[in-house]
Length: 85
Image 1 (cartoon, helix red, strand yellow):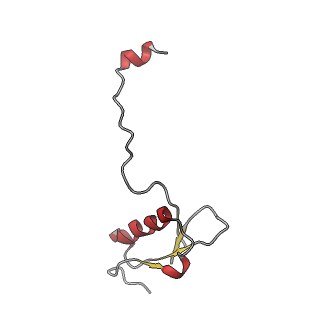
Image 2 (image 1 turned 180 degrees about the vertical axis):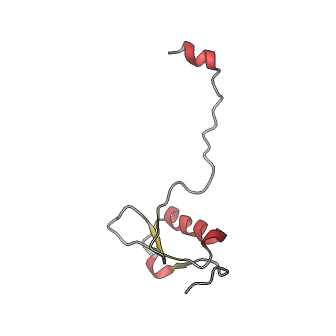
Image 3 (image 1 turned 120 degrees about the vertical axis):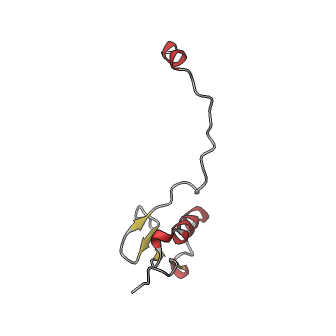
């Protein structure tokens, strides 16, 4: 039984087929104290719709790369956006 004080781990034998972004997802999960004591295993192809499963059977999927989106745009004024409709 995992100890909730121990950091999460990744089963590296199951992670060899992961893309870098998918592996980074597991690193983020592993570094989050909410997942202490968990073990993450990579899911082999064909893609079942998730990348990782923990020892409790919960599934996780890579979304983004963990960095804030760089899509800052100048906001339109309300009247200007209404006038363009």
